[in-house]
Image (cartoon, rainbow, N blue to C red; front, side):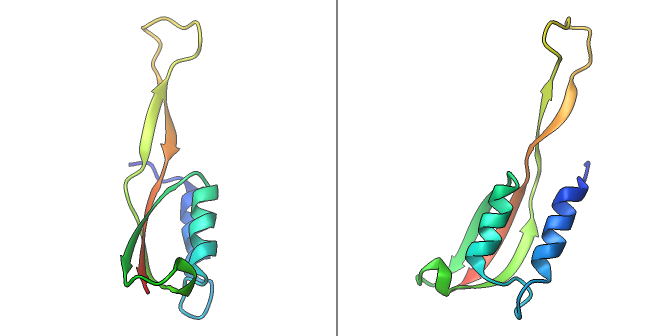
Length: 93
């Protein structure tokens, strides 16, 4: 598995924000999504997200796509490109 430094830095920055270690859940979720990641929420409780506390953030599998340059033949090796990362955000509401 290839780990891209951007995802590692983003998670590290998120992990140190705020008194609980994760900060505002809406800011965290938006930040991860703006970086092109899919965010899956695991909630306990039914309050609005802004009233929740982030209890854990875990990195899930990354999804890759393979592309060949336009006009290349089938013998050209495709390039592996990160499509998106996945993060699981646990919320207690």
